Length: 262
Ligand code: MG
Image 1 (cartoon, helix red, strand yellow):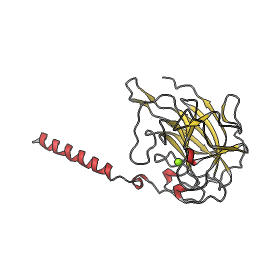
Image 2 (cartoon, rainbow, N blue to C red):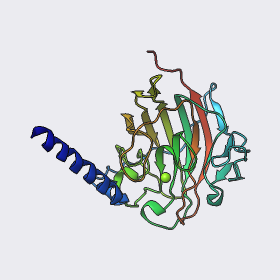
Image 3 (cartoon, rainbow, N blue to C red):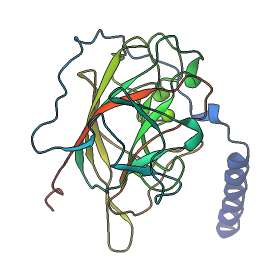
Image 4 (cartoon, rainbow, N blue to C red):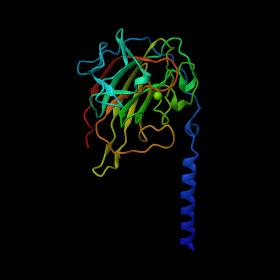
């Protein structure tokens, strides 16, 4: 009797799980409240690379980057005037080099007069570890979050669909903004199981927005994330498919960090 009931429960659970997946929508995992408070950031400036940093962009070229979809192809985003700008038609770009844990500094600018609303307004992102082509990886969101409402775990400074930022220090479109990131890569057992999750700390325009949060796995647009074992990975920038004007980047540097002691 007990066995039969258990079997029935298992079958019912299996059916409802399959059914739920087939009807899942992006909106299912959007969170809209409470909204992080708005914090006025300090003046622009700083961010100079320390002596031990590797320059990933020095204002001149994208020699440290390749196309994500074809790592044998150069990164085809536009370099001009000491900055580079997303070329949406050419897709995501990522670093030639692969990294474990690191400190990363980058600066980005939403163009003045940008159009669009919500997620379709200056959307890009930093995949802190690219785990495959397209958008696979752990995404720190880039978006115009200056008076632009969207779900809070999808605004600038969020770990997309996992953690809303602790505050909203976004500057208006047209101004440069900074991310300073400490990324601790996940570790896996020899059998491929998760040993320690990825962790990330993020300062956005000098304001702490992510405080050593443990990630649930690589970013998913729909559904719940989970880990798959990987080694060192590239850092990837997103060419998002929305119709708003493309954003720009400058002054990107990284400092590799030693693996955590066991
Ligand atoms: Mg994005």
